[in-house]
Image (cartoon, rainbow, N blue to C red; front, side, top):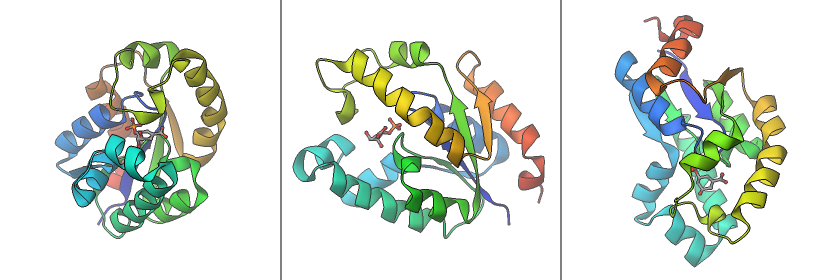
Length: 173
Ligand code: S3P
């Protein structure tokens, strides 16, 4: 049984699309942590934030981290905030290698220009807020990861191939 692969990084960095490619190529199960939480709670992330607040969402997120780390051979796309909490890094890294998808902020901004699904970004000062959040979070992702991969300019299938090559030992049966 192989370790899980956890993809982390800022909202819009490509965690879900790279994760899907990686799962397809390696025939592993893909778990998008936000979708996992939504399914379990029968509510969208936006609905959870709106009705119970961010702290409550972070509790659900932590529970999800503990649950998925009981399994093996998973490809996991973390949420943009997941790895900012030590308790989640501890839970996930028990049984995973953590890859930080390092995508430049200008690429992310373009991707999330018309986003309505991320509660943290529904604000008038979105641009400045994203800049501040990115600057604050970048070193945390760097510190939590086992491997940092520049990924903004490459198609997700190419990024997936790089991860497969780098972690060939993890994928060996
Ligand atoms: C968040 C990122 C989102 C989601 C929630 C909070 C964050 O996930 O978990 O809206 O704190 O950066 P994505 O990175 O998949 O958008």
